[in-house]
Length: 409
Image (cartoon, rainbow, N blue to C red):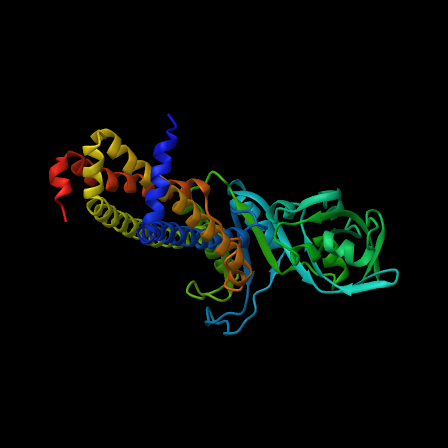
């Protein structure tokens, strides 16, 4: 029940002991503020890692080619490996049951023109499955289809920012773009969580690019997603098996690391997971250390506070105050100080994180923030610690006889 007289006494005691109150409050506020900053920066790093994989399927494998770094079977060093359509078909035949989606890629950087607007954009010639490899979101129209590939159709799907750059506020759907002097119909407009760079891409059928640029069956890259039912270890082994099979097919030394390279998201996830586990462990240890330091600080201050007020408590007992009321008053005062200081520390920590966000982005820390549950839990821990720290000496002080308390120094 709300006792106005008790609250009045508490505020009078606080006003008479400003230094003690400030020291207690500062200990709590600083601990919570530091705790908030540590966890906020840790979450910012998590957001950075999450964003870097946002535009790709998390079960993707990317297969690249390069030059051989070792001579093998009479073939010279420095030989460039060239993927072709039969490499794509080979992987389908060998690993069809373990592949979810698959697409080739051909890269071009042509001049693109619409009426008086023009610019150079990245063009990727792909298969229809590429939509799911890149998590492409169709905003208007449709994506490429197998029928487009079969007839080598002159159609393109453009990014949202390509539409903005060339068409302004008008819709690009069903309009025609000139790409390296040839007209292509815009059949779709997409967005991508990967950011501006991904939304300035143009996609066309891989067969169209092969027919127009050299009339070859060459491809630059093969991308695929493995069966989501695979475990992480199975997915890593699958990526290595793909690399091994392609090395055999192209007569590449098994020890050659540059001729055929595989980037496996399963390995990336494993590495990021290990890194985040280590980071979380460090933050947890530092955070707990901060809280323990705060708890020790509160405990020491509360022991001193109760000892300092022994004479006052003796007078209260002589005037008829019960041990229960004395303990309750001290705990109520402790609760008020710890709650206000803890909330102030939380606000200070959040404000500092907000202020530092632009600067932290330069260090690849994105949107540093902290979970309400974590900080409130830490604040409650300090409040409970403060109550315990206040209760034990208050309980002992409440048992002292009035005459002994009055004779205390």
